Amino acid sequence: MEKILDHIYTMEDPNYAREKVRELDDFVKRAEREEAERIRLGKPIHKALKQEPSLKNTPEKEESEEPKQTSGGINLAYLAKEEENDPTNFQD
Image (cartoon, rainbow, N blue to C red; front, side, top):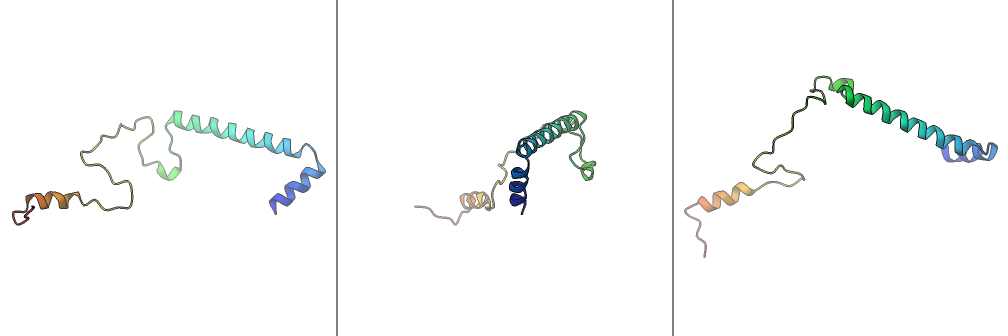
């Protein structure tokens, strides 16, 4: 429906498409300025995240010794360690 209306408006007003692009560009520029200001002030993205530490004071995260799981798999590395330490495990 929106595409049909856009087509009709474009046929009625030759400047419609140009004006629509200009409005989108203005919107994007305004959103970029607001986001930059939010980051500069250290405000959260949403009011519900006020409890979180501000962006300015967020410490760098330290890497843990064990790699974090990044997919839906299961880490079975502990089984290999148990097999190495198992005295009943005979390998050829």
